[in-house]
Image (cartoon, rainbow, N blue to C red; front, side, top):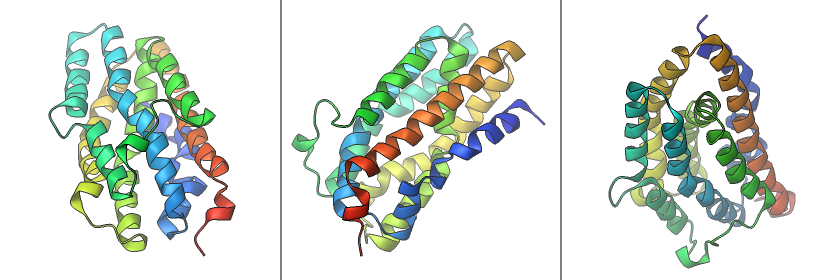
Length: 224
């Protein structure tokens, strides 16, 4: 068994498709208000994500690994269809006005997610790489699931609204493979640090979704 297979086993319990939020998404049970709140809050993680990669890149001691991380960063920020912009188009499609997205997140869990990820990626290269992997490893399947749920239950088929997820359903398959290879190349001691970073990152993502449901009184706003 290679190391990433072992790491995946450690992370599977926290796979976000198992979270009640995404279970409800895929059943069409989230209200429009909860989806809108999610779009506003998660934007703060999306807009910070290129900076996470930049921090990991700056701590990486190997030029070939830095080049791989640089390509990932460029994919996030390049051109008019950079990933924060694509997320804003998703929010547009849900009826969220851009001016209504707060400069600072409203929920404690959202701030914990962003601050926690910055702490991880700025600590050291192996830990940051693990935090990045915790996100990238599950993004393709989550994106495909979101597209399916939006089309089937919320009747959202507009390409501009779905493009963030369409891009991540394909692009992050490649990113996941690249990061896996970087992790496999680490020394065993560094892989231990990567595991700690990955588990910490996965917990932050899980707890963010906890916050969306609890702050929006999910049980009271669920669609009947």
